[in-house]
Length: 296
Image 1 (cartoon, helix red, strand yellow):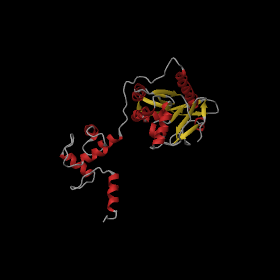
Image 2 (tube, one colour):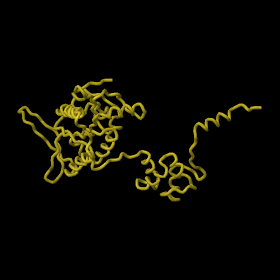
Image 3 (cartoon, one colour):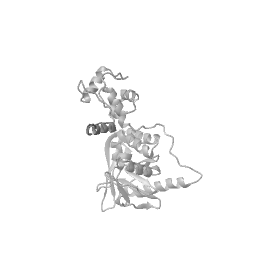
Image 4 (cartoon, one colour):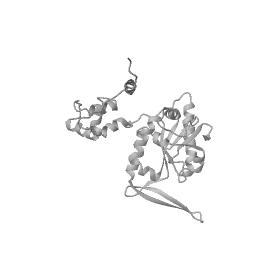
């Protein structure tokens, strides 16, 4: 596995799907000195990870081994969600989802935005579209209206920080390497100071990553996000919950007869069918017993 240090103390891993590609806005110097990690953003919400230790894996999946490796890498690492000025405006509705994923793994969650965002007289955000360098040496800068209110952009950046994240402005693509190097050096330096301990700031608002099992319960007919927690709290086990809500003779707070009927139809159960939990080992034993020779 390729693993190149950009400073004496830091390695960079980048998401293989979004950053390790030809049209990436990251400069070549960063890409060439980084290790592509498949599914990094899927699991952590980050495009980049800065590490003092070696990168332990180039592909993350659901296996316990890979999850343990990811936990070890992120424990003392720095996660970075990288955005261009246009990207960050288009991502305003989902920034909190990125941050909640990142905070599951790491306390140092950075939003790094490249480029320049300004405000129009009517309150919209304008972003740098491109620069044209002519033989005269003049630089022509073109701005583009994103359609987003500037206040919405500013509120998104402030909420990211008030929820415990950190913000890193990067003026242009040439500044990425010095920005990441300086960031890693500052954090490492503060960690090494014996009289001080660098910790995450107190958050004004905590983000809670959605529970996949609770999301499944909420997807059942008639429940949704409001009623699902009431039903979930009666079981705390998805398999037992599904058996219970599909039992036509069991009363469950929050689900009436009509709701139970709709859920059973949704699960594809006929009137005479119901769900049941079965111990696989017991079933295997019964099948084995059926095949035994009779004992005379």
